[in-house]
Length: 322
Image (cartoon, rainbow, N blue to C red; front, side, top):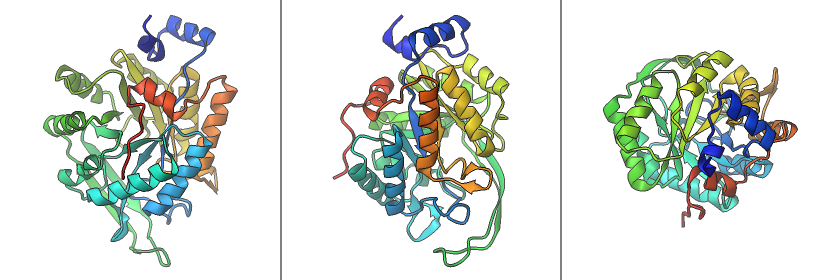
């Protein structure tokens, strides 16, 4: 068995699972989802918003064991909204890299509500090492609580009912732009139909092995966050895929544990879940520390950024932003 196949084994294959348990599963890549596009300090005072706050929070999580960070830059003119300019993204990269010399930097192209597709491309010009790649239309209906003073840029409660209309053409364009820049796509699977788009991009030569595929469980029109649904996703993965598992809200902890048990990789952080336990708000570092502790209890090492780079086929030399 090749080294890549050993690291990206078929997660639902009985005999490969038993072999991995006997020989020792590969190190787990812990991806921090540091913030998000819409929730802010009105939900959790520890949720970073400015680039300086993001750099501080990401640094704490990096020291706790994060191998990669998935980020959402915010608009300095209205910190409650996502950034739309490359300059803001580049500054964020500079600040994080100054604190975290080898952390893998992963930007969102999902952005936020009321953004144009061209605005979602802004982060790619800032040269992240990895970027999220959404595959299917994204429909959301959500009520956001009021953002009151003394928080900057207060706003009243608002209700959003929107669909981000990803098409085959748009997804192909995003994937092509990432390949041209040497950015590895973090492939976002929200439901089983997403897998058809993965195969389409592979056929076009726009995705390169090993594939970095995230199962997004429990997000409104995403698949329900159940073990059955996770297993079905995994059965349909292309060979040579690394599995990154994320669960939203209450489901972050159980799905993190499931992925650690099965040999997958995990995403934790305040973008997906603002609580450590019921009634207790979390910090990014706490959520990473718990994932690291669980991994160690299950006899799994935690991948250093250097190990994660080698596993994912990224440059051993971290990106620089002078």
